[in-house]
Image 1 (cartoon, one colour):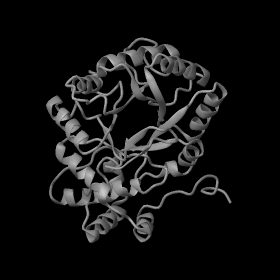
Image 2 (cartoon, helix red, strand yellow; image 1 turned 180 degrees about the horizontal axis):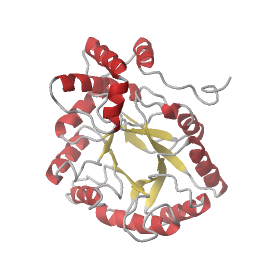
Image 3 (tube, one colour; image 1 turned 135 degrees about the vertical axis):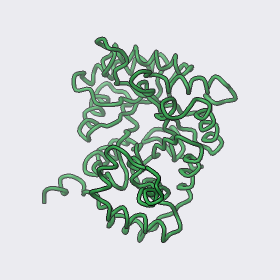
Image 4 (spheres, one colour; image 1 turned 180 degrees about the vertical axis):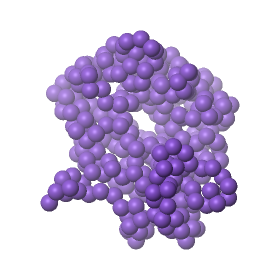
Length: 323
């Protein structure tokens, strides 16, 4: 397993990040613990979760599952770069959502309790909070850092100008600011190349792509449908009907190379200079094993150019829409 720095920080993380959103609602605890152990054995030291994971009726469930895995000992917590998130609604009363100083303090302590740890290596803002000023957010983070409860901060689902606003506010204090940004990013959905990635590169923020297979769309969907396996749902199912020719070309490209579409999709992200680590969210051990194979895939300039032809991305702003 190769490791790299998380953004401009000195923290070293594995080139794949283990996403845990399926733990609880889709993956039973025993299976989740097995996946966590297998990921650790493979060299993945980066685990991502969120306080809201677990489903509408049981938010926090996923963190609890991870906490019980840490409680098994054997260096599990010590060897892990642990990331969680704050923003989502955790109770039907005011001040249990968003990024207010009160909610950051309350949500952080609750996450630490569920995760059975005394600190988070990376605490991420799950969404921009347009109602809370950055001075308040950074003040709350600064207090948590001084208390030893947070080491690094990151964002998720931010626009380019949100990253800029956060970093400029952090520089005025001064505090470290963001070191990472989680964004929807894959071969099919490349919108962040317009402004988010340039902003992230300018400020030394590492990109952590979520949904690297776009809900299964880049995982061999046509072949699976042909075999009678239902493999996509939601937005991916709608996109399939609009982009069937491109997806067919992509699957042919992978087959001609003797690799799976999923391996190519993950490998493409690993070849993007702004990307620190794609977030893979396996429901089973087999899916984790398949994701690990992408680490051995090399795409040369010709292959990358062909993928750009199949799934063209935008130019950076303003060239994407102006001279």
